[in-house]
Each structure stands twice: as structure tokens, then as C-alpha cells.
Image 1 (cartoon, each protein chain N blue to C red):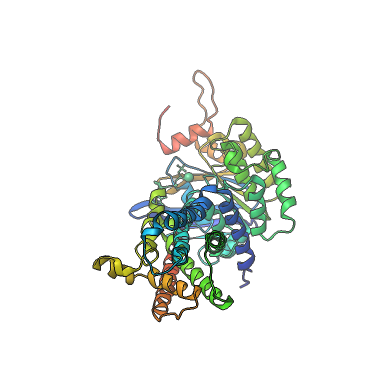
Image 2 (tube, chains in turn blue, yellow):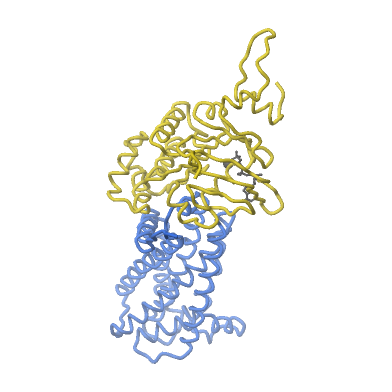
Length: 255
Length: 254
Ligand SMILES: Nc1ncnc2c1ncn2[C@@H]1O[C@H](COP(=O)(O)OP(=O)(O)OP(=O)(O)O)[C@@H](O)[C@H]1O
Ligand SMILES: [Mg+2]
């Protein structure tokens, strides 16, 4: 039996181009994902910073890792939203009735999420530099930071894909955005965890954002990286794989 | 091999959504190169049949052969040989009309996607609007873009699920002309419609789907022969397809 040639990478390239156009044409996405974290950074450094004691001279240095994670978390809701509209508008049905690599459409959205997050993170880091952020770390450390951020993005993107593909209403699609937004807030992103009440502290110290924030901070300032990061990374990888399998199953069941 | 080549042949197709049986044993055949119209009231299961034949939905039982490929066993081959215009326009509203066309041409791995796009856009009267976002299109323009997107490439069989619903009379006639052109160039057209006159105008053969089964198939002439001959009472009246449809399904009396 002859087989049909598939073009996974070219197809995914088309999908990536398409959804990058979506991102660049919806101004509200760019504002929420880039401007909002910058505004938070300004607020915390210049308004609240004086009252927060973190043990560093430059609060912006302490804050930046958490701000980066917040930007990524903010973008997750848009992944759900974009997938939801594709399902609703029948775009996926059109793609699925065509001879294209089936998962290319989903991977296109995931890559878009990575690319658009990379761009907004660069902008945020530039603003932080203007605000006095300085990092003595070398290229290797920054590559490690980029890797961690990419993995975190992948994890949230695949999680966000699940409600996007299965929701019946727009509100349903966006529902995952709320808990994801809160994760970075209840962590050591803004203040050290030892000032928190016991219950909150227990949560903050045992969710993946805290070790990720701590590790990025350590890498940025050439300090030793604790071993919790491996546990956090293992969790991220496991959750990503689980979410990927689950999202694919929902996607394939859709027809 | 039979003398007449079949583009579609369906046997004993059944499909239920949860507990709701929609198709309860559908059989029909579509000759290659012909225009086939599937008629049925709202909720009869027309879209369900289209989705099964275009590999979007799996039937519960029965077989469906499309262009010689089994939809359940060789979906990739089926997809390569068909194109689908679903019931609701599936266009990317954030992209322009031209970008939509180019995207589909790229996904079909065709050379010169830009030329293909311009050519089809012109044919569907969308040249002026080509560089506007599809979200600014009227319903009719969107539908025309949708159909144009489906005609990118070299499909031997085109599914059109209610292609003229929501179009103005002019738009309808345009789409009818496109359908005739497709058939003239040897492409098989599978059409669903609510409009009986549409089937009457276009179709080489017609099937009526009612309560999960195809209750009649045939050419318009054959269907007309099923109807009691015109009676000479006060005036002589040839039965229209509408009369036949209503008489067979018994939904309404005149
Ligand atoms: N995903 C679904 N889940 C549950 N029921 C469904 C689903 N899709 C369709 N149905 C039901 O199946 C029946 C047939 O639907 P279908 O869309 O095939 O009809 P149709 O002939 O295309 O109707 P219309 O002329 O309104 O487009 C309807 O009763 C519909 O409510
Ligand atoms: Mg329908």
C-alpha cells in the first residue's frame, strides 16, 4: 500500500507563521503579556519597594525572575483563547480534512507561544536594565536561564491547550488562566517566603515557581544553585508530558 | 471493476451521538464526475454524513469508500483526494483573504501559492477585498472566500455542506456557476442543501435523507416518476421536487 507523504516541518512552519500573525495583530495580547509585567515591576520597585525587605540593595534584581514568570503565566490564557477560536471557527476541522500532519496545528500554537514569550521577555529585561538591573553572570548561566524559562513556557502552554481544545464557551477556555496567574504571586517572586504565614509558606515553598525563581536568581548572580531545582525541573517535565498527552487526546477526539 | 466508476460508495453507515441515533443504515453511491445532492430537513444528519466521508468523524458501523479509499482505514489518502467546505465558513478572520488562500496553498504544498491565491480570489469576486482582513467581510464574501479556499489544489471530489445558505440570489447563482464549472472539469461534487430548487437546478442525482436512512435516490426524472402522475382536474401541474419531497417524507400536506 502506498503511503502519503507528510510534511511535518513545512506544515508547522505555515502554522507558526499564521499564529505569529495573530499575536502581532492583537494589540491587547502584547499589552497584557509585556506591558502589564513591566507596570508591575515599576510599581513594586518605585512604589512598594522601599517597604519590602529582601536582603538585596537592588529590589529590581530580586524581582526580575518573578516578573519574567508572571509574563509567561499571563500569556497562557491567550493560548487557550487562540485554540478555542480555532475549534469554534471550524479552522481545525478544515485543517483536519486536509492532507497535513495532524499535530502541526497544535505545535504551531506552542511554538508561537515560545517565540512571543521570548520577545516579551527580552523587552522586559531591557526595561529592567534601564531600571538599574545588572547581572554579572556569563553566557552559560543565561543559556541555562533561557532553558528553564522555555521549559516553564512549554509546561504552561500545554496545560492551557487542554481547556482551549475542550471548552464549550470562551469563559470555559479562559478558566485555567486564573490559577496560573496566581502561581507566581504566591511564591518567593516578590518577598522571601519566611515572612509568610505557615500555611501560605508551605504552599509557596512546595510549588514549582519558588525553586524556579530561586534558581534563576542564583544563576543571574553567579551563586550556587540548590538541588531543589532538579526536583522542580523533573516536575515541569512530567507535567509537560502529561499535559501534552492529554491535550493530544482531546485534540484527536475532536475529530 | 464496474463500468461506471464510483467516487463514493457507502454501505450500512450508522452513527449515534451518545444515545441519539442519527444515521441508522445509510446506503448510496455517487458516480465520479457527477453532481450529487443530499437533501434533508434540519437535523436529518447531512453534516454528519459529510463529516464521516471527510474523515472528521468515525462511523459506528458500515463502510464508506471515497475515491477508492476506505475512510476508516486510509484516512490520509482520502484527505489527499478531497476538499471540504463545511456548513459554517471556516476562514481565519485575523488574516486577509489573500493570506488565507496562500496559507491553504502552502499547506497543500503547491508551487506559487501567491498566483493560485490571486487567480481564485479574482474568480470569486474578491480581488478588491483581497488585502482586507476576513473579519471585515460580509457573510456572503466570507462564504465565497471559504469556498475558494476549498478549491485550492487538485481535489477529485469536493464536499459542499449547504454552500449557498445565507447568500443573496446573485451570490447563489455565482456559486451554482462554480459548481457547474467544477463538474465540467470532471470533479465530483457532493452537495447538501435545504433548497430543493438548488438540487433541481444542479444535481445529476439526488438522495433524500430522512429518519436516519436514504429513503430515495435517483435522477430528478426518476424521482418525478415516483410521484403520482399529474392529474387533470382544474389545472395540470407538474410536481416540483418540493412536492415530491413533501409527499415522500409526509411532513406536510398541501
Ligand atoms: N457533536 C454532536 N453531539 C451531539 N449531537 C449532535 C452533534 N452533532 C450533531 N448532533 C445531532 O445530530 C443530528 C444531526 O445533525 P447534523 O448536523 O448532521 O444535521 P444536518 O442534517 O446537517 O442539519 P442542518 O440542516 O441543520 O445542518 C441533530 O439532531 C444534531 O442535534
Ligand atoms: Mg448541517
